[in-house]
Length: 69
Image 1 (tube, one colour):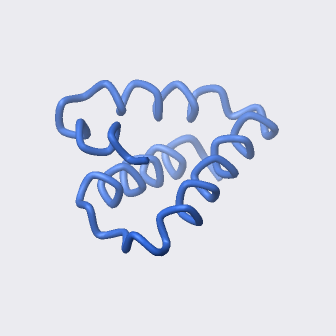
Image 2: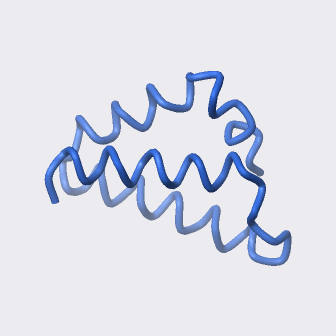
């Protein structure tokens, strides 16, 4: 995947988290998968994609995603 693909995926993930559409009974699995995605980016040395994700979570547009627990 190219950085543009990761950037698009990052935004989609955060938009989904921000929307509150995840059913509570699936929240633990979603959190685990988010962690696996971020670990994959690290293992694949996709530093730009990690930086992009990190910068997005600081944007007010995604403030609800930051409360994702």
